[in-house]
Image 1 (cartoon, helix red, strand yellow):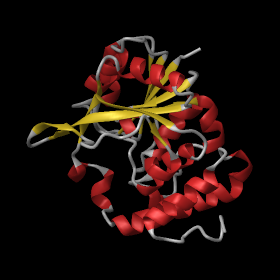
Image 2 (cartoon, helix red, strand yellow; image 1 turned 90 degrees about the horizontal axis):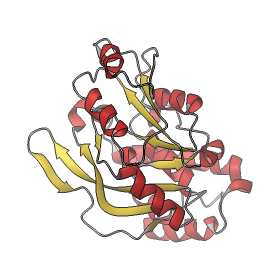
Image 3 (cartoon, one colour; image 1 turned 180 degrees about the vertical axis):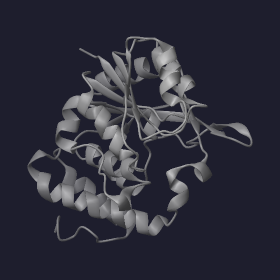
Length: 264
C-alpha cells in the first residue's frame, strides 16, 4: 500500500493555510489524510480548516511550544498512512508531487524521497528552482552530511524509517534545524530518491520564520552533529550498510574529525 499521510505544522498562518491544505488535497494520487497540527494559534486557523469540510482533513490542537518539531511529532504519532509527507503551512505542492516521488522511491528502492522547489520570496515572487545544480538521483548520507539538500516540504518518508529515526528532535537548540537533524538520521537508514524537477512552491521568508531567531550557522552545525552522534551511538545496529565508509568520505570533504571517537 502507498497511503500518504500529510503532516502540516502551523502557527498563526490563517493567510496561507487554506492554500497549503488544498494543494495536498488536489494531488494526482489522492492522499489518505491531512493532519493540520496546530501549535497554539491565536488567529482563525481552526475556523479555516473547518470550512474546508473534507473528511480527510483533521485539525490537531496543541499548546504553544514554539518549536516545529513538537506539532510535527504529534502528527507522526497520529498518522495512519504508509508514507509521511511534510508540508509547511506557507508552502504549496504542485499537483503531481506525491505521484512522481512515490514512483521514484519505488523505482530506486528508497524509503525516502525529496525534490527541488520553486523558491518564492515575499518581495520578488518566484525566483526559479531553489537548487540550481543538478544533483544525483539518489542523495546519500555523505552528501546530506556535507550540505542539507532536503527541503522540508518536499520530504516523503516511509513509516518504517520513522520507527528507527525516532521522529524530529525537540531540543530547544535544534529549533530552527530539527528537520536537517532528522534528514541525517533518515539518510543513515536509506537513500533519498531525488527529483530535480521543482514539485512545490517554497516560501523563503526567513525574517518571519523560526530561522530568524538563530542564524549562527557554525553553532547550528555543531548542534546537528552532536544530535547525530548521540543517535548513531544508540542505533548502530540499525544503520544502513556502508555508513562508516560514507561517513569517512564526508568527513574528508568537511575537514573535521568531530565523530572520530564514534567511527575510529
